[in-house]
Amino acid sequence: MFSSAWALCVAASAVIVQAATLDDVCTSAYVKAALPLDVLTGITIDSSSVVVSATKNYSSASGDFFPAATFDYCAVQLAYSHNGMDDDQVLLMFWLPAPDKFENRYLSTGGGGMAINSGNSSLPGGVMYGAVSGATDGGFGSFDLDEDDVFLLSNGTVNYEALYMFGYKAHHEMSVIGKQFTRNFFGMADSEKLYAYYQACSEGGREGWSQIQRYDDWDGAVVGAPAFRYAFQQVQHLWSDMAMKNLDYYPPPCELEKILNLTIAACDPLDGLTDGVVSRTDLCKLHYDLDTAIGESYYCAAETSSGGYGKRQSSTTPAQSGKVTAKGVALAKAIINGMKDSKGQQVYLSYQPSSTWSDASTTYNSTTDSWEMSVSGIGGDWVDRYLNLIDSESLSLDGVTEDTLKSWIYEGWQLYDSVLQTTWPDLSVYHGAGGKVLHIHGESDYSVPTASSVRYWESVRSVMYPGLSYTASAAKLNEWYRLYLVPGAGHCAPSTDQTNGPFPQTTLQVLIEWVEKDKAPTTLPATVLQGSEEGKEWELCAWPLRPLWTNKGTKFECVYDQASIDTWHWDLNAWDMPVY
Image 1 (cartoon, rainbow, N blue to C red):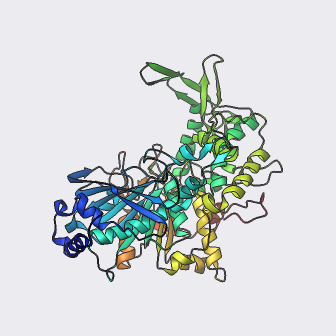
Image 2 (spheres, rainbow, N blue to C red):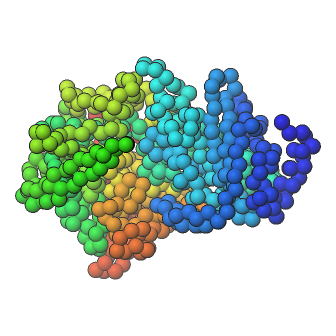
């Protein structure tokens, strides 16, 4: 424990920290004196846990969510605990910019899959903009452990603290601690504004919404392809398997790949420009007939993969050739048309045409020389672990029907509505504090359906502006919350099937300009990050406007197209409750 005199001395020096060097402040003594020990009631920060290290001239490679950069930073790891809880410890990791590069900014980052963090891979995205970047382990035991690793204390016993930390508590605690730590570290006066931000995708996108729907901790958030509406989202991964089971048809992957390639080729020019990118999946739904793929020839060469730990292991996928079958197309249609119950009522939405068929993967059985179902690991883990409370990864769909899937959704909805569903549409607290949101989603996302984000944006619009017309309410919502669909992009990244498609790599920079300088984006800048057109600049349209090229592909516009908008609005008539 430091003496009060020492603390005062460090605090005084912090006032002029902008003139200090990284070596001056990146020390254990300085960091310990800057810890916000009393910032949260019921939490104790362990000063003895602090680990500090300085890194000079760090080169961060270009990523999907931030460009390449070189910078100095101070890495700090610390632990805190919740008072009265045995064996409770939460780890936080912060990267702090050099004092002369600090821009009065703080950034929280999130995870993906069942992880609450991305290790340190997302932290450069803040430091390069002069922000302190933070990540949390959620109290799971390390930054390498995911929530599903700690969800069950034993079979049938839920670790509710871990569940609620994952659901929303951990990020709130990190933001409160991280913001005050940032202020203390850089000696900010109480009257000085600290801008707080968030950036993450997929599960990290859901984590972002868990905070926006509850708190006003941030001034702005970049949320990508959020895996919210959790009970629906996780079971939805099993719908492609169910569709195969219903048809009793398990296609070779090459057949579905052919259907995908034909879809991309046919729907590419519907936006007015032929460039290898499906920018208007809504027009694809309206105008492309999948039946035209029947009878088309396909071929994929044999592939051998090797791996294993300490042993030579290999598996061979044989060459695949044939013609697209009526059953193959029927499967593609069933997947795109989304989950239905036994009465034909719509249970949930699905992927857009031009999305890869990841949930419909099959595996080759060399003994029977046939292709077999490979049940989605994400969907299977959800049912086994979170509904049945068993530690298993071997879900079978034997005896399972469409109505079983529906019942699994309903059960998960009831069990986890307050913690994982994360679709509360009233954002009054966040909006009232002046918060901004840039919400992005790949239009060809194969993991979280793009229509999921559209549905949430529309839910917020209808709940918060119920007395206005559609266009008026959309305009009001776009004043502070904008949704951008990314042409050709897959899940939180550019697509390998549409390599000329763009990705909004500098969205956080755009958000900073919006929050700090009131420069609201009309279109969102994006860049082709791969392929033959790498470096080409795009502009993305804010929903509900859609991209269109006119004048023989020479003039770009964002247009209002009601017929197209309507294709995104799913009537989930299998439910009597509203599905936000």
